[in-house]
Image (cartoon, rainbow, N blue to C red; front, side):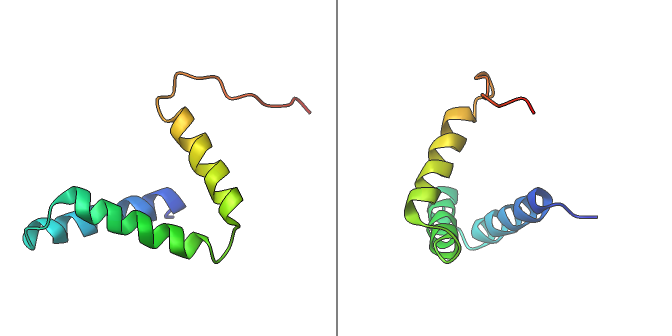
Length: 72
């Protein structure tokens, strides 16, 4: 069974492969993907929610920061 992450990864992999065939630089395609994702995400969440999510993801990308949580 596919996961949201495997679906997203496959889409990015396919886009980058197509860009290579078309001789389009990867950063240009990735920026276009990001803009498209953000436009679509705005249909479901507020700009403040998206900003908060992006900030969280960027801060924790390295994986060396503890993520605070509440115990039940």
